[in-house]
Image 1 (cartoon, rainbow, N blue to C red):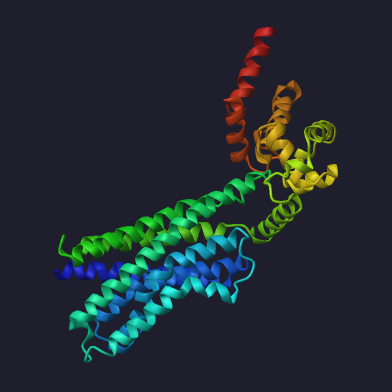
Image 2: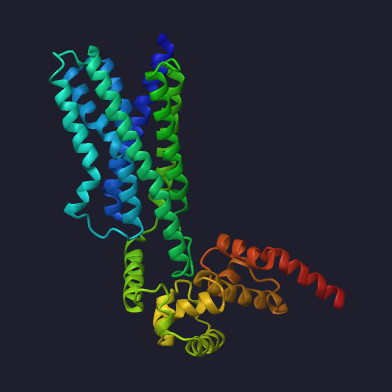
Length: 388
């Protein structure tokens, strides 16, 4: 490796590690989603330390470099585990970390012990020992596969979460975690890229290329940059999700073994609940509450929430999110149709209809009507002009 390339990689490594440390500090002092942020901070630390430890190793500071290596190299196995626990925590599926969950870190502890044993049984020159390199290859390979598996499963967990919140919340802006849905596959790609490059270079299929290392560091810098923006701006959702999960668990327990407990709510009762629901929606307009959940609506109707979910899903073939927002769009359309509101601001109409952001209002309005609120208003104005 030529000197300019080495200096460039050193610069990237220092920049990436400094960026990670700064974000870890910010996460440590934030009050929002504090428990979940601990897991993400651990992920960033281990992930970034892998590259930084190689930089320290080249400086030949043995004690520090081997200490960092002892943390980071076995730590490859738990980068995916930390992402997984962050997802569980932020979605409310993990209220408290329990002792039995240490089993998820079993590969890490085994790798750490293995790494320490290898260092102390290679005659003091582990870097030059063939047995050390074989052991290192095995340990890193197992760790990478473990982390990639956890990240892949995290994507499944997030998809299940998204399906769940659509049947509980009427506003998903704060709850959908779309940024994490994008970041998790990006982390998967970064680890997979690192993994493939490591294996191919080990078996001599490709030569070790500093450009691939630089590309990995740049990907990590991008991940940290994106993460910093979204983590800092992510609203507190842990408590709301805990409440949602408790409500769903209570509903499932009361519903019995079948998903919708059809034996507890027959067709006649569903029809009765549907009439009561539609009457209440038209007369009381609960959808104007931007924060309404299915539990809130069920409490108002004095209907078990899982029964209300059955009625909306089975009788109307919709989830709760779509059901509520169709009423909101209908309300918005009526406001837009009124000539007295021809000069009203679109954002004001959004708020009057139960939405809490213009972007959500625009996207939902276009999805349901096929046009934006501005287009809808323009066409109505054009029709009125023709009629006059």
